[in-house]
Image (cartoon, rainbow, N blue to C red; front, side, top):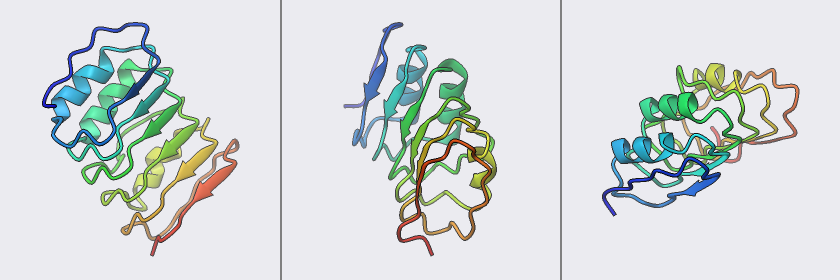
Length: 139
């Protein structure tokens, strides 16, 4: 699949996981055209960028669940997702200790999974609602 065109203003859940050939612009267009999204699964979408995540944050203020695992091009730097309660970032090659500053803005976060983020060397967070954190296979 090379394109997704959605005009679904009431859509709450979008799962485009493992759509490897879906370009970043198509992912951005699909997600931002669904302002009521509460759940977005885009794991294994290798083209996703921080720019797309910034646009999604701007257009989807109710987004509570985001799975961006196995997306090598995201670092989350300068991305603000304040309403997230669950953030899954397994094997994201761009996630570093600097990414924690952006994650810290997700004050509603309850679950954070950063398994196998090889460049992550330290974690410093002040998230009062955080209940679960996974840092498996982090150096």
